[in-house]
Length: 265
Image 1 (spheres, rainbow, N blue to C red):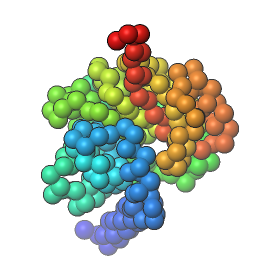
Image 2 (cartoon, rainbow, N blue to C red):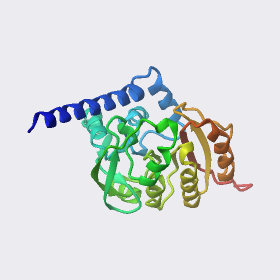
Image 3 (cartoon, rainbow, N blue to C red):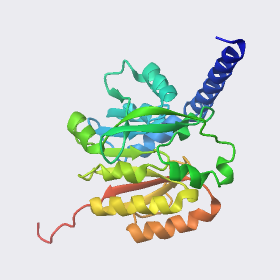
Image 4 (spheres, helix red, strand yellow):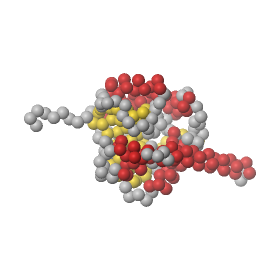
């Protein structure tokens, strides 16, 4: 091995370590964040539930859900994030780590990886093209790709049980993930990026066809719902239109509407 090649490997390892360290500081190092996450997700999850974390990254939701007595299925194909999950939760009997991607159908694919920003790895080239025009992503470079196995939400449910909650954070691949789901969970969430507004609308259409859902929005990891009451799909679209100019990301939450009680029942 040449000296230049050795130096390149050392530099790559250092950048990857810095990227993962930054993610750990953001998602695990902020005081009070775990408590806020736990309080927030208590409205969706009960002890003994199964929850799917699709795009588990470095496991911040996993940590909060464990405190609620939930059985967590943490799905993550990105190699560096996967190593973190195995270190943090590999021996936890309540956490199952699945080293796969999720899509519309099982198979093989390639995952585009940003070495310096590992939590924005993506299998959606069109999403990468779209968000790179946004100033928030100006310094993100998808500089390599890795082969990954792909499963579906339906396959995961067959393996591990029907989920009460599904969190989807897959950097533009949300519609493909939702296309592999045929039975409505009690609640779910997917990421919203103003730079990919139309893709969020397509994901919303899929969810709305899946079940009788009501919706809300939580901006930028605040763990607070923006609307005082849960909305129908059109109401959510109007809400996102209000937040879109600010350019701040967040998560759309959906929960099945409670059936109306018949008089006298």
